[in-house]
Amino acid sequence: MLSICQVGRRFPNGTEALRDATLRLNKADFIALLGPSGCGKSTLLRLIAGLDQPDGGHLAWDDRAPMAGDIGFVFQDATLLPWATAEDNVFLPLRLRGQSRGEAMPLVHQALARVGLQGFERSHPRQLSGGMRMRVSIARALVTRPRLLLMDEPFAALDEFTRNRLQEDLRLLWRSAGCTVVFVTHSIYEAAFLARRIVLMTPRPGRIEREIDSTLEDGPQRRLSAEYAALVADISRTMAEALR
Ligand code: ADP
Image (cartoon, rainbow, N blue to C red):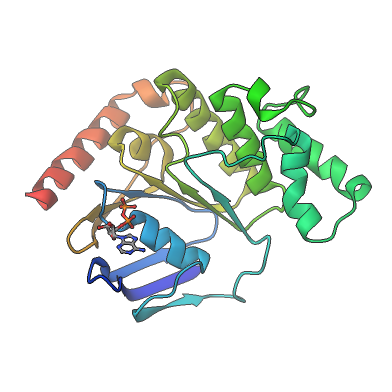
């Protein structure tokens, strides 16, 4: 889908947020960008989204460059409009593209149902829990049927139980949606649970250190399996060596 070739980004204050980053995003892949704070994860995500430009290297899309609606973005904060219902929040990206309410509502309701929020269409953000607000935010990102879903630590502010549940549901969503997900996290457990490819990054300067492929099977035992524990151990060891 996208080739990222030796991309660098240095900010005007001299911070080298990213050096020589090379990565390939394939169709329907699930990639975790994993590393401690300041290793350039968000910078790389912003470059992929086209929200920022590299100073060196280049990004090459296989087909055409993405247009509005091809990329969905989910942030740590759900960033919902507080005065608008769940339905209206999810309608927003379609409204901005000129769709009428009547035309959009079936898609909006479908997106809310996919994240488990059937029956909450008319609720306001303040009436929803943190996990539910994040579900609305994910529905809003999915409603345009993006080819690429970019997620920047979306579950970091949630309690562990809610977070685990959302991770499980995100795996199912990803499988059914068929889009490519790039997921930024500083949690080894989260990266190991979610991703098919885990990209390890280190700071000062921000660099891609290594990629680890996951062969974990889906299923109710995923988080309890010996394979998951072994993957977590492998990532932890590699990361500790890289940071030494
Ligand atoms: P991460 O997402 O891994 O925490 P970031 O990509 O946010 O890392 O940041 C990488 C480095 O670049 C950090 O040292 C950060 O302080 C710095 N940085 C990020 N954005 C800017 C900016 N706009 N101007 C200057 N420095 C920045």
